[in-house]
Amino acid sequence: MKIEIDTHTHSIASLHAYSTIDELVYGAEKHGLRGFVLTEHGPALHGGLPHPYYFGNLQVLPHEIRGIKLFRGVELNIMDENGGLDLPVKYLKILDFVMAGLHEACFTPASKDKNTRAMLAAIENPFVDCISHPGNPAYPVDYEKVVKAATRCGKALEINNSSFKVRKGSDENCKTIARLAKAYGCLTSCGSDAHYREDVGRFDAAQAVIEEAGIGGKQLINSTLEDFTEFYKRRRAERKRHG
Ligand SMILES: [Zn+2]
Ligand SMILES: [Zn+2]
Image 1 (spheres, rainbow, N blue to C red):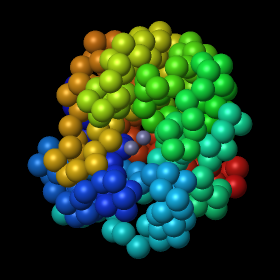
Image 2 (spheres, helix red, strand yellow):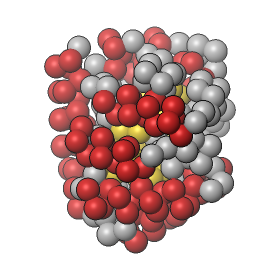
Image 3 (cartoon, rainbow, N blue to C red):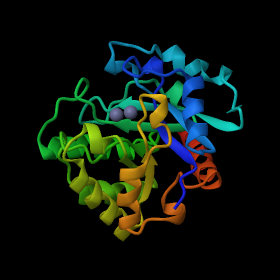
Image 4 (cartoon, rainbow, N blue to C red):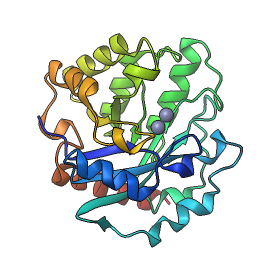
């Protein structure tokens, strides 16, 4: 299976990442991608940075650099069990891809029940397209409920390649998510979560889990440029409709 689009990358604007956008393009070229989504962390992770204006001004970037497509995204922080997010709707309406995930600095790991409520609320939020690293073992959740909700809402659950390295214990959780996703027909994404240029388009561990579960075709939203384009256009139209 090929993966042409990386749906999860961070530049230096994410403050704990180490490459510029042009360097991320270099990584994408090196790994044979057709494009990637720039998904900086939402402002709540680092005391308000990057400023929301950063997301509003992404429109000045070209849609393509040296033949590599550049999509405008974000990795929002799920702030509370009601699914509160850290960017106003006016920004979410204009982006190509809106991910949301649980991060320690913004949501203290809680009971399985509370973590699950937070993730379900984010899935049901019409401005969210995808949940980043739902397999993070720091946040036990009811995977059955999460996968069923994402399936019903047409949202994607990410199998995150960096999780296998930096979120120890993700393996079994990601396999469970992939198995349930296959069973229920839930959309998935495969993201590198690159914080450095060399990791853009690096999917080996996540891809193995996805392939082992038998997920393929349009069920993986970023396998081809065409499938990803179909997904993000549908979701963007949906977000605009709710704005
Ligand atoms: Zn994250
Ligand atoms: Zn990330």
